[in-house]
Length: 206
Image (cartoon, rainbow, N blue to C red; front, side, top):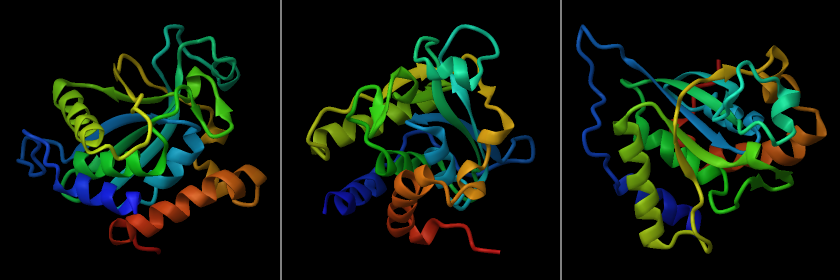
C-alpha cells in the first residue's frame, strides 16, 4: 500500500523550472548521478527505464583521484558507489528518475542497504546544478511531509565534483551475471519491484 501511495504522491509532484522540451541549440540529453547502495542494483534498474540512454557504475564524493573498487570497498575513501544516468529529456525527466530512485532503495538506512554496510553504500544524490538540487530537496520534503517511511530520510544531497567510472567488469553486471547468488537474491527482487511499479515506463524488449 505504501508503494502505491508513494507513486501517487510522486506523480503529483511537479518540479518547478523543469523543462522537458528542447531547442535546436540545446542537447536533449541530461545526466544525474545517484547513490543507492550497491551500484549493480541501481544500474540494473535504470538500464531498463525507458528514456535512459546509459547507466554507468562508478564512484563520486571522495577526494583521491582514480579510486579503484578495492579502495572504495574499504569505506575509508569518502567515495560512494554511484550510477551516472544519461537520459533523453524528450522521453523521461527528472521527476521520473527520482520516483524510481526513492521506490527501489531504502532512503532511511544510514550508510547501508540491506547487508551492504559502509559509507560507500550511502543514499545520496550528487547534483550538478541548483535545478537538480532543488528538485531533489522538493521530493524529499514532500515524502517527509507525507510520512511515507517509518523512519526519517537520510539521503544526502552532495555537489558532484568528479565522477570516476568503475572497472569494466562492474558495468552491466546484472545483465552479465544473472545466475550469481547476489544477483538472484538481492538484485532480482529489486528488479521485480521496479518492473511492477513502473511497468508502463519499461524499455521494450528487443
